[in-house]
Image (tube, rainbow over all chains, first blue to last red; front, side, top):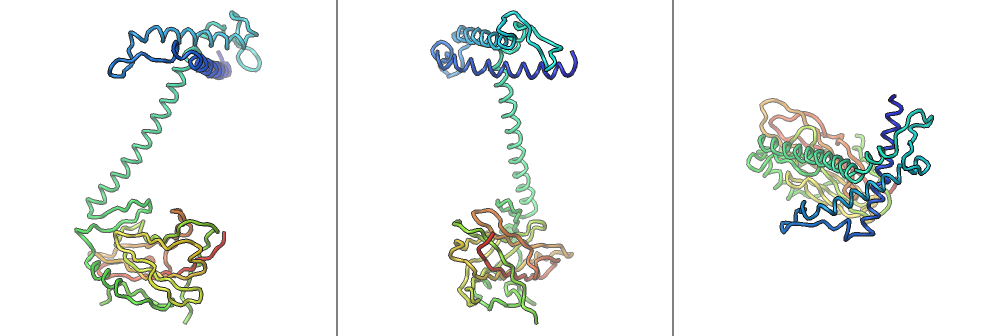
Length: 189
Length: 131
């Protein structure tokens, strides 16, 4: 199998899986009692024993849906060959493609779960980085301000020597002309 | 003597709170300051807010209530008796709806070194409607 055939095979498999998944969803929506309602334990976990027949039914529906979908690619010949690629140099039997694609739901659930896990990891990395930043700031006697602007001020325990005086001075200042040449907040001398 | 620089900050028309942030993002330092508001003819209108290490953002209202008004930020980088000069850089940001529209290092004392004496800085700007 050439690399082009492999690409065509993966694309075909994904397309059939997606179509199968949609067909299974339609079937589950149409017959929820038979296909969608999971049997749960009192702890609200899936009861693998009591839920076994429902799972088998879903598998059969998925196999049928995959077979129909794969056969549609082979001129509705259920035992035909599905051509791969534009030049049709390679092919795969319909039953084999159906078997590979019938895990549509599981396949896509796995892909979505994998993507979701990646997103969660990124979120945790960001949160961890933020916590680390704040921890390092605390170690250095600084208080990090959560503004994303990295504005940092010294903690109250190690305030700048002139902070209290500066705040008092700010409270007593009169409004200067706009062209006031220098700030009066700084302590001079 | 030349007039001190006044930054022109253009804010797009529309509602939304406008605020002024003061930060020292590159070199953590303690900042304090006071923000004054002036009318379009530069007559004083009073105190718009104060900056302390715990409050580094001052809400000044909407564009409609501040159109063409001037602001003066008198501030200082407060020293920590550092044994050697350490760099500082102050950044003043104008935000609309929490998003920075304008950010600038005050040209008067906004960057430099600090050791064992407070360093003053001044920033003047005018809010104008525009894109």
